[in-house]
Length: 173
Image (cartoon, rainbow, N blue to C red; front, top):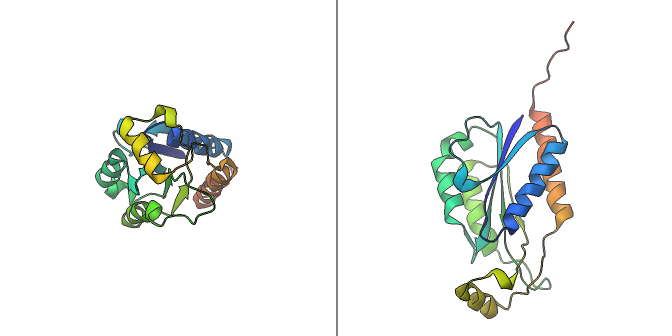
């Protein structure tokens, strides 16, 4: 089974999540390609797709939204999972529903199997002046909040679902 894991990542954190998902799927015997969304020309050759995007201010990145719109017909004909990455907030506060809203809408439009939101990583040193100002206003902590175990478990669930959906091949006589 050929699986495409494709993401839009602004500073690399979401790309690292995609690589972890791809690695987990590969351990389950899948042929996996992990590719930035802007480099995907077609999904014809893939049996399943995992699409992810960094989220900023509750919004998916433009390249991921454009990919989902462009490939909607083909994505609707195969198993698809979505993930969003990016909330980096005070862990004592409840998650903001706005962080999942756009991903949920895209998942619904594509009839995706699931949309998962993973916390992100904030390295203030790699931010633009405008981004640093927004982070200061939001009082976002500069830390890595990604839950690698939850990410691997989610990828394992995807792998199990894909293995279950494969037709059984009769044994050769």
